[in-house]
Length: 298
Length: 342
Image (cartoon, chains in turn purple, green):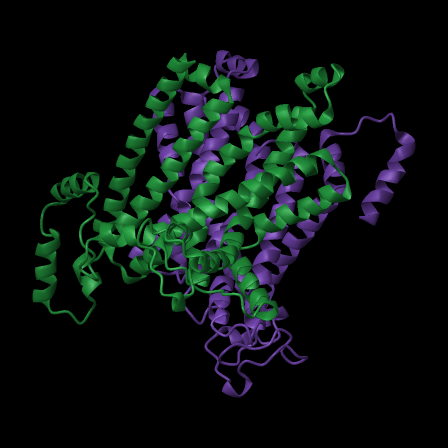
């Protein structure tokens, strides 16, 4: 913060200089405390997940370690967040739990965002029958209650991380398709698209070089906000018993495990529970910040 | 006006039927084409091949798939989803016995969402950028981002610590010996039977699950209402009203609120999907024993007939809610009626 404000103060004397749009956007972002906090939280979550083995005090507790002498210990200096029913360090497991959450986010959004974007672009640009089929399909998919569908799909297949990912992905692309479709529809009638077409540009060029850049802001805002929802969604799935197989630590199933020993062993629930909250809060604040920065509706 | 209105409703109904058709096809594909034999899955590994074969014939799994689908569709239209592979009872009957509990919870939740979120949105928009606004923002952000199971658990812990007498599991105090047998709605049935002690107990049981379930909706709707109010405050029509000397109170409540409720009501429809999903989690935490608990059980036991029905019913639930919302929106927003009529 201080670095940014001092550099902007340094720019003050040269006020007549025209500031670039990118700089203005960054300025808006960095002056928004919520957005900066969000960026900080998201960065910290990513760093914690990547460097989990180095940060976690008991990295080996991620596996099926059993230490009954240390079971259900309340938080103290040795185990900062207490221990679970078989004596594993809850803090270490929570730290590793971020990995599964982020893996789910990458897996789901890495597939569903491109698919949704392409379908949205094509349906908004092509019009006619293509448009009707794709938007119709999107609307029908949006009418399915996602958690129920994901539970059903995931469990009929077999409850594990890959299937959870597949089932969430199958439902997630629709939001992006709808969003990109809306932007494409407005942009496609602009004069410069017509100009590009008249000058002989291919459809591919128009779609990806002329229209897509208009969608980047919307997509990045939506994707950031979605990361929060995918984490929440994944946590709810694994809380209900569909997710990673034990002993792999997963935040949702850790909460479900801890719940059995409430209200006495509150630490078993609160640490992983608030870890989920921390991550979703971060992505949400960052997404809101990006939305204000780009000044778009997403 | 009426013509546009009728046409809008007719269009929505056709769309409704289409969505249901696709939904039925998807659930069928989900339940039949996935690897594994539904009869074997339901009976478990200890069943003999003869038992599996017998169940297959009984459930019609031995017929070709298209025939099975048509049979399923024909029966589903009549409200018959077949028999549970686990209990052997008709699925529809089982669902009907669990559905009122969830409906009761969801209806109360929606009332809470509307009663809290819309006023909160109006207030935060009115006192924009003040401490009230910041407080409201933190509140709605917490609602949106906190997992509903964490909310449910926190409420339970809070109750257990500070109100040890407050019930935190189930729908009613069983020692009262009351069965909700008229409508299935515990509160309504208690009132109908003039059992005020049961009514009181049912309301007590309802409070925490309903609050836990409503938090995410409150967060969303507050945000949307706030931004819609602010958006409309900037428009020319508000300026006109103000320049005519109409009091701010009248502008806010008679004009702005109606205009600004269009966006939140639209979102409420979409929020329904999240609500049904969250009901699974909240019902589990509070041992509510409703449709969602039944659905979760069916899914975990791989009772495919029940799973298909649960997904269908959840879908119908969502679609009907959106149909109602579309109709309300058309009443609120004349532009929608005219656009559809063209």
